[in-house]
Length: 277
Image 1: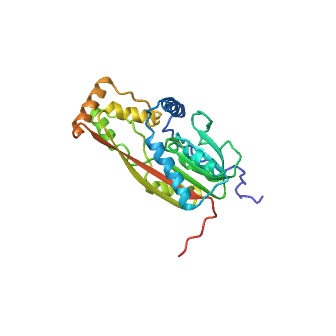
Image 2: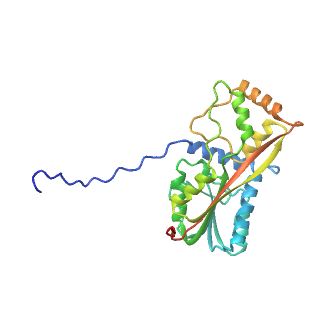
């Protein structure tokens, strides 16, 4: 080595920083487990899961995509697996909390199944992972060439009435109770970052009327939509009473309409095309 030359370095590049811990994995599993237990009731609300499952089946029919092997994550209804199996598709069902025939899965880790899915459908789970970009990369890598991923969850714009009620109930010292949500623009950027081709991002609105705050909260609990934030902030009894009063003040003819925005991300496992200029 010539005198004065800098020494060669074999040190590997620094690892990328870990994603911030916004959600508690343990609370997330517990909320899902409680949801599965509540879903055993005959009158359990599952309108969000039903809407998302119906949308997946409609998309497959429209696209004429007939998968031979599929992974379905988080479908409470079982409708997607049932519909695909009726077409001769091999289906693996999974969920962050194991239940019935669904295997346990951690979406922030490589999928624990042999790769090579023609379809991966995820319903109502990926909005509460700490590393959403990494989870989408795992989904992309588990698809065969020409495979499709369709991912749905409540997105930005959901629960505006509840947000306002909680802010009013804790006006002096509001605590984080509803987690950050993904919007259409961010969804498109996430799919591109994960390497999906021909990404499509859309949202649709469901509006549901309630006559009591406790019924709204009960619906959220039964559908696994309660807080799984790392930082816990229990609502005091006085704040809960103020929240019920704020609900009543906003109700029209005793009824308040809450909004759920369902965001759907879909993309293909195909070579990316160079942009045209």
